[in-house]
Image (cartoon, rainbow, N blue to C red; front, side, top):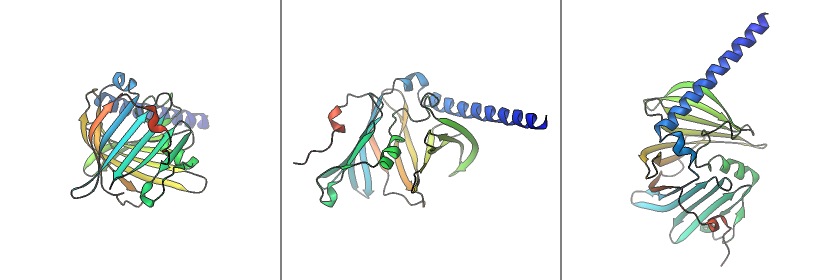
Length: 244
């Protein structure tokens, strides 16, 4: 009888946690445009600059799409050269001419798995159950003087994403990633700021800063000057760079 009571209390606790996590997630999407708008988001294209130092801006572009499959493209230009990487469904490639190489390298299975976590234009939290994920509410924390709700999302592969959601605005201020591979673990996080409403009507961050697992910033921030929702994207951008 005691064991049954303990199990019942545990299940009740889990249900409360799931409901609390769902409540936080729903408030986040309500605050950033509403679920109806987010449900129609298929592609997001961001253009702007990587801030390399005072007065040193390197143009960047990022494309995320979920039709016909989860796909991702980004590029970085500096001194007349452009590095690119792309992922489409279960394949991807990297092209980095800065080291003198003029051919693409295929993404490893580990790189593909990690890239997919960042490629969904709706974000992993949107309709997470249908995508096969689970979430857990981990309570509140202080983040640089702001109270934030902490929500953990776990994928079918056991990868974990931690979302730090502002308790006042319900904007996502930080996402930490923890991906466990057979031979290593990838950890790091990204902070977000400069939230603006797009022409489409959803609110997204126009600036982000990557930080490695040791707390060191990965270069300067990325600042976007334009964010487009559901633009027309040429499918050829996901094709491998052809050596000329």
